[in-house]
Image 1 (cartoon, rainbow, N blue to C red):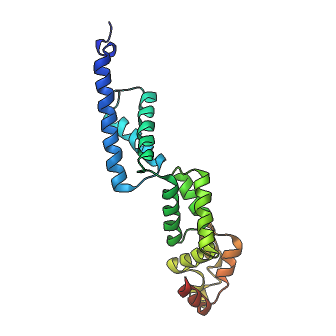
Image 2 (image 1 turned 120 degrees about the horizontal axis):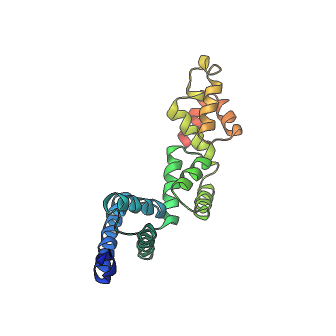
Image 3 (image 1 turned 45 degrees about the horizontal axis):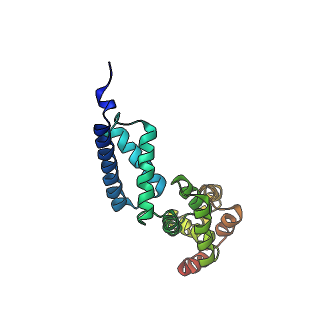
Amino acid sequence: MYNIKAMDPISNKKDFEDLTANLRDLAYSYIEKYNPSKQQIKTYLLKKYLKKFQGIKVKKEVTEIIDSIVLNLEKNKLLNDELYSDVKARMFLKRGYSLNKISQSLRIKGIEDKNIKSSLEKIKNEKEDPDFASAMKICKKRRIGPIRPQSNRELFYKKDMGILARSGFSYDISKKILSMDLKEFNKLIKLI
């Protein structure tokens, strides 16, 4: 009739400590390998719990355990969303992401708006017109715009404009780059 194990506080405490230790070990190994954001580590630990330890605890208890692990990792400076945001924003900029796309990518990773704004401000202060430079990188990488042979540029103007728009660049920047000639483009791309 009664679940003896549920009434035994000693075995419940042991289960709690085992689960906490297992999740903490998983968190350390994940941080070592991937350097995630807070939201990514929470999602990872919850998925691991559901996969490996399903049914041991109520979901509310598990989220409390995960939150305490994440808080502990922050106190020990193993997790830092501000630093994560800065590093990822610079990495995305090097890949040729627009500031809009960088913002969206960081938001998807669970970074708070204040950290995103701070990272974007740092980029704007360091580089003059980062969107323009990123758009040029996209053109070079995708071989569009000024890189295309002169005879095909008019045919592919709309397609190139669409590629730049989907990459998060404004109409003005896209138009400015697509109107460049190859010589001017090559001069500017060397400066980037």
